[in-house]
Image (tube, rainbow, N blue to C red; front, side):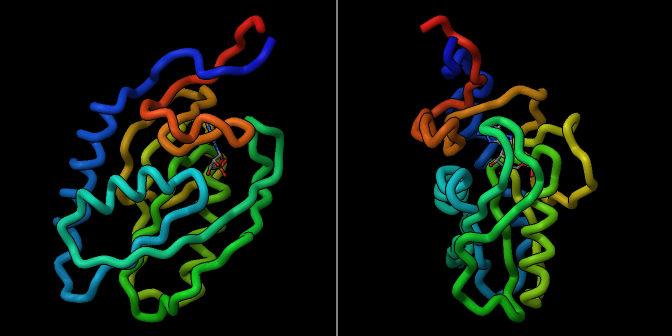
Length: 178
Ligand code: 5GP
């Protein structure tokens, strides 16, 4: 038995509509004159971040932070390591952290505290997918796309063993006989 994308959980049209809705909510809260600094988490959030940025009618620039979380291929252990930090100075900036999915909350908590340490003027968090039922620690998310059940998902930037990030829909991984 091997693990493969088995069924569509959220199709591309539903994702696009939600991304546009999230962009409107972000625009409504960002009325200050300074540009927004989008910090996208590598690698899973890049497709979401690219779509979200194109929807945002705001002056913005983009930065990337890469994290590695230890654990099995479908369960993170919560131990997080930053493998690539932002290079711009965050001091006094309005930052929007963009993440693909929040599960236990450990990765996001680590990232929020890491970025807060760089003294931004504001820090908000946008997450496409939220597995609320799996949360181990409370974490502040300002903009949530979809609350999803406890299933391992791939596509729209999310991978399994490095694959399936290019699928346009969010799909549930399941066992197939081959
Ligand atoms: P947390 O620290 O909240 O438990 O996990 C967050 C990280 O685990 C995400 O950034 C993502 O890399 C990974 N993750 C959690 N659930 C899933 C899932 O269903 N699919 C994929 N591809 N990654 C997940």
